[in-house]
Image (tube, rainbow, N blue to C red; front, side, top):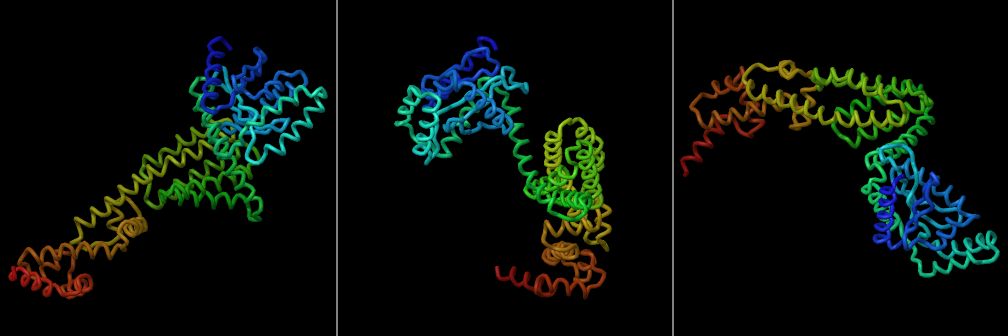
Amino acid sequence: MDELFYKKVENVLSDIENYARYGAVFYDFEGKSRPMFGGAFCRLCAACVEGAKMSGQCLQNAKSASYQAWLRGEAYTFKCWLGLYGIIVPVCSEPDGDRIDGAIEIGGLFPEGAFQRSTYQIMATLNKLDPSGRISGLVSAFQGTEEMGQMDFRSFGEFMKEAVCSSGLLDPGRFSLNAEIWSQQNRISGRAEDLRAISMDKERVICFLALEMAKASDSGDERILRRRIDEFLGATTAESSGNLEALRSSMLVALAMMRMHRARRGGATPAQLSDFSLEVENLSKESGAEQLCLKFQKMLLSQPESAKVARTETLRKILHFIGTRFHEDMKVEDVASYAGASASTVMHRLRDETGMSFSEHLNATRMKEAKRLLAYTDLSVGEIAGKCGFADQSYFSKVFLKHISMTPREFRRMLVKGSSLQ
């Protein structure tokens, strides 16, 4: 740690004091410097941090709490050995590294409702450590202290984190990554507990969850997909029991099932199907289970957009084929062949987009053209029926009546009558 490093620390301590009205302290875990105090740092905390009897406990508290902050990727609120509350953020002399060299802490805080009961306990503890009463006398400094709500703890912590990161004392990218991992691990640990209560064969459950994940990915609903990913990862981490290769193998099986599901539904392009080898390579690079789980999640969450593009292109082809060739004797298999999809996919896409079945949408398209021809041409009803894809005029009239609530001739007479009145 050089002079520039300590100058950054001083600036952060000053910024925190200006923002929070509370002073802060910097702990050097390597022992190369004494604690550095901000001007408004709690006097009792300062006496403890530098006191011969209590400094070791304060330092150990700071190390433990800063490690928790590092794991969580956020400022960490803790209760010290004496009963006071603090907010702490780790500091790294090499911000892109993994080693915590120190921490910056706001101390001497009280949450709402804790002041009265805490001060009595603090006095009793200090009198045991220092019968002379010199240190316990500093408790009087708390009389002007305001209790803090959860929002205050949170906002002070956010400011501390931003101040430390922006100063270059902590890598914000790495800290945010830790926050993502912590959040995900908390979610999937709960899912793992749910799985342990299920008596079914665990491998079968995992395959079922992989298929559910595939369906969620195909739907494009990110909220559902996130839930399915958590369920799958909870099941696989519980079943793998810490075996990294078993966890990785389960993920690869899931990816293969998702590709198979998408290919069967006609929703995957050849390029997407060929990406499987790249995904395998990406997963093989991770050497930790937590990082592997996060990479798997990000890999799947990046796919709905490409899947959406593929679905949009398939739908465009379906609508184009029907819109330009409705006059032909058309079957759903013909549309599927043109769109490069299955007949089931064609029917699902049309239903999702238009709310109509294949035959309903085809007839609606034909009726639109029939109305145009009846209004703007002198073609007979039989000729119009043929141009709209109906081999039988009577069936054409029946379908027209169902859609328009009048026969083709009645529709044409209505138009002629309407134009003569103008």
